[in-house]
Length: 268
Ligand SMILES: NC(=O)c1ccc[n+]([C@@H]2O[C@H](COP(=O)([O-])OP(=O)(O)OC[C@H]3O[C@@H](n4cnc5c(N)ncnc54)[C@H](O)[C@@H]3O)[C@@H](O)[C@H]2O)c1
Image (cartoon, rainbow, N blue to C red):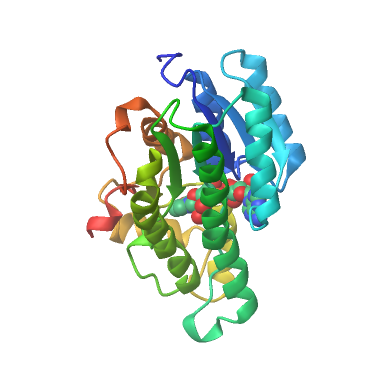
């Protein structure tokens, strides 16, 4: 492992207390980055930051934030700059899901998912870009990285609102790449498929509750059999290399791209 690959990169990661966000934070710090872990769950984010700091390469701080609030996004960016001097990269990873069949979607389900997955991504991008623009082009390209999903490109009937929210992440990636290019900011993203995290473990149960699947674990089995070319589900470790690539200078000439890390689901 090249422990200097991300040296000099100061990265804000939302939703970094657990799951893929936490795995990426740990990996980026192993590669030399300084990371700010933003999450609703401050205790878990702090525990993760302590684990990272104990390893002694890149440094970590934790901040409590609700990504749906503009002021929390601004405060998380400010905390990153206070701790590390400037911000180079924002990774907008916080997200959630709650499946409903189309005719069972209500306003609460719509607002909860759209606010966290899409509106908050826009807020985070805007507040991070505001700071990057203020810093001037001293160390650019700055990078905004959006976490999409297989649901950014595939209509999945049991998770219509989640799909709507994640198609929105793809649109934010495309429009942000165009709108922020003049400031030396690139916007890219990555799109996982099935990743075993607390989000998917809850989804697996919820799919039984709404009657889409008959037993827990069935969704994993059905997707692996019917949709994936690589015949297994994935884990956060399967995603971290692509996330690190998008943070690294190896991706400096890329913008407006959403890379799928989904075992081939999107070509099905
Ligand atoms: N797990 C999958 O299979 C999968 C597949 C495709 C895309 N994704 C996306 O990847 C991202 C990470 O997912 P994960 O599976 O690691 O999820 P996870 O549930 O394991 O972690 C999500 C984190 O986001 C935090 N969070 C939720 N709402 C928040 C808010 N309002 N403010 C601040 N923090 C908040 C949670 O506290 C949690 O720590 C999400 O955007 C998700 O939609 C996941």
